[in-house]
Image 1 (cartoon, one colour):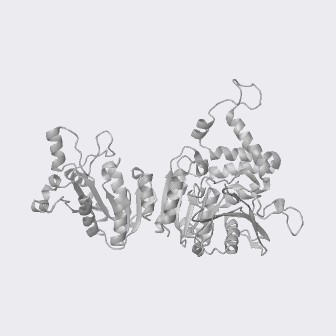
Image 2 (cartoon, chains in turn purple, blue; image 1 turned 90 degrees about the vertical axis):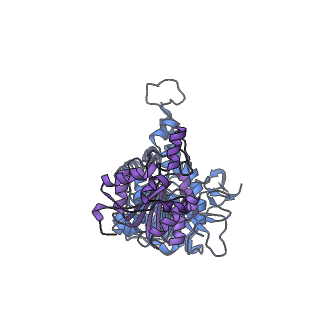
Image 3 (cartoon, chains in turn purple, green; image 1 turned 180 degrees about the vertical axis):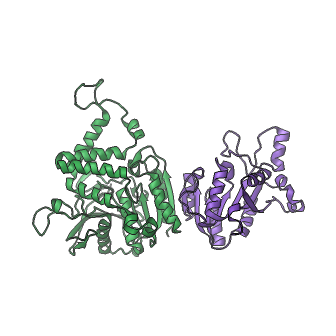
Length: 206
Length: 354
């Protein structure tokens, strides 16, 4: 859970007090619950799993049971301060469509994902010749919901190609020594990528 | 098992109806389950659908086989737990199960109202229920819950009496009937107006078709023949689905008044929150309730996208709302039969209100 704490502490620096937040793929709602407690945010989670919806209800979180692959229709343009897609991008069928939807509905878009470029995962393929698994990626190839294999490098390239501007990149090192290395090594050293995005269209608004 | 008795509440002061007419005095048949706490803060109003009544749970004292229409949902340890909450259900005005409706005697004439009964709306039904709540000493309901037309009433409660509703649970419902749903209602009404006696079972048969999905019909009946091995090559009952619909239609005549069916379906047809309030956002703008909206994946009468519209309007208003899409093959009827998941969601939702 140390990984989660690191992620949360970064997210807290990025999410202003009392902002309107939409958490896509909110899971059991633990992140929104923390943001509500620590940042007094307002907002909704979206998740497709009934069990997750139930957990959210238990925590008093407003949640919408829906499939992100269907987009965010019904949500007006620029109606949120922050839209989050945390550790869910790897399950999305149409990432370009969804990211554009996120940029449409929110001033600030935060995306985090498990980084397949991390050295430990690379070495599992290299030395063991097996599909890598880790704390963040615990699934076997045949039962994984993760249909996308993304690295930090891939994601940056993807944004360049699709006119999505990366405002900030936050390397999430698993320990403090990570910061001793140059930022360009993030793809090797970070188990997760965290990016703050904006559309080229809305440049200068946030 | 405990039995329950139906109670009656009469309000002498005439009710001003949405149509501009008045109706009064009015009587509401109702039942209650569980006990009201000292602070009167644990009351839940259950609103019934088109053909429902006040007998929502337990055995009726007059007949042990007469079970409440939502007995699977209401009772000790159930989704609406009578050990903790005080549950109220009343028959709508316009109905024929003890509340003032077309079959009631018009005190002005001494004969049954019949079609001289004024047109009533969902808001009128709710207004009458508000009087009952006042009578029971309940100024604020912890929850108003209902499926189908019951969901329309639940939403109307939250809109018309925003301070009186802490949470609103509309199930498998819509803010306005789709033209297709409206069309089915109109055919049923036409059948009744042509011949009330023969028309009512027809209307009910049409209704039952709309409550089931194609898949649930296939699962339940398929093309199976009714007590025969081959076609009869005449117009007697051949198919199981035919026998089922006929049975449902005939059974309905014994327990329902054709005029009530006309009046209640008319109230459903007229229900249109956007038309009445200008837009869905305007309709919900002043609501104070926490919402739990749910739709059934295979419901083609009140489709999930219609529930999502309600949810999106509430989200645009930044109102607390949770949306659940119940995955069930059983169509509109699932809200009464296949509601385990909803039953799981209600207790934590109620706890989150504390």
